[in-house]
Length: 129
Image (cartoon, rainbow, N blue to C red):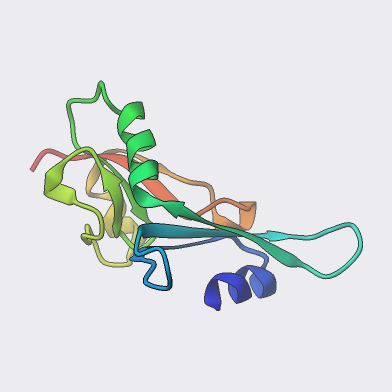
């Protein structure tokens, strides 16, 4: 699977989804995978599926006092979760151009690059429409 192969070969973290895990749970999930290099042995991967409603609940609690639209998006501009129904999970904010994505936000926090071992997602306050 790509969630295992990419971190193994590239040494970079990966986030896949959100998607419906139709292989058994039928839950909306995201898969996170990070490379792991033991002192001895080959590079491997630590991976986990996170239940999206749980992730969304944690996100909403952390932005509860915000009166502006706050979104968590993938590096390709797909909404993971937000505090507004206007930008629901799975909708696309922007094309894959990171500079176009950044222009949609008043306050934009790109997560450090995947080379630094971080998941390539972003959190931002959207500009008023």
